[in-house]
Image (cartoon, rainbow, N blue to C red; front, top):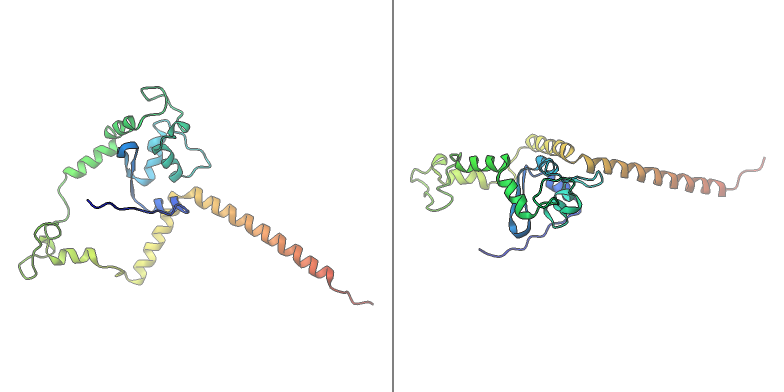
Length: 206
């Protein structure tokens, strides 16, 4: 395998995380401590006894739970030591969870797509390999970019906005409060400036 460095800008971390349908959280040593729907991740750890402060959004909360500082969030009594779970304990709890069971059922299920033409021996054009047989036509529909019609793009953007509204309410509320505060402060400053200009103007004598 080739080594790869991945850079992520965290300036709008939860906005980005909210757009993913599913996430995987890794603890120390690369152990999987959660894998499943993004919107269920915070609730999963809250049920294990990890409190989420009101001032902390889901992305920071999940980062805290998956780090060595998780003991600062722990309020439960379910671990073997009586304190916060170790990474090994969280990994073991996940292996026994319904989220992990769902993943295992999906791995055992029959694939919806036939990828014989993508990996291994590709079926050459004209040899009978169609979309259902893993031929070139099958792969082409996964490699096309920017093919959506205008109204399809509009609907997708609306769905994205509603998804962010559903999953990122803390960030949105903070944005509304910030914009109101900025509007009031700028408005007050402009009003004071206008009054200063008006007071400096010479008034006509009667």
